[in-house]
Length: 284
Image (cartoon, rainbow, N blue to C red; front, side, top):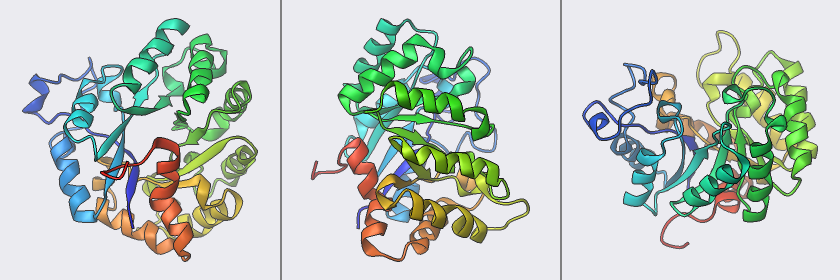
């Protein structure tokens, strides 16, 4: 069975940073800086039996996509990219930037609401990119790091502005165990053209809950599987941050253990990702 990691990041280690300098004041955490390079990721993928990965542009580089572009260029059968949308660009420039990065192996766009001045749906460039993504069949991912309740109505407006565009909700929509109000908002978004990443388990675990996060399985994953269905769920690790929590390989093995049906397992571990982003490997 093919395994695709749909959410992770890479950045230059200390030695590589002279060639790929970080954005101003965006140096990675010291406990991660030298275990998060492309080579580090490849080592972890090989150990865990992961065939391909979607690299989400890390905040450490802001809108400079050179490091991720280089990783895709070096390992085109292993990697695809998700660019970071720059809300300061004018609509035409934003669409041009999207199209430029698509040619470099980027197959998705990330909206980080905390980089916007106001609502995402009120940004003309974001709306233009949403519509172009719909035409190109490129998904838009949204990170609700501070809580989905802050962005639910904004996401609804985005989805309504371009119904043909798939919107991906990162990390269980950040609907934490114990916050059913957040989870109800995530379930509400099922009526739109949305999918959910079963990723970064440690970010939504209950207070004082230890790995393997049984409450996440019972109160989040199983309910999402029932509501959204396996064809709208996809596995991700959130490398390299997962290395400081429950580990890369153990996260993948845990998610596998949560799925009983073979068809559902294939969808969550790779099928949904390849439907949204294209096929990885030599068979593409």
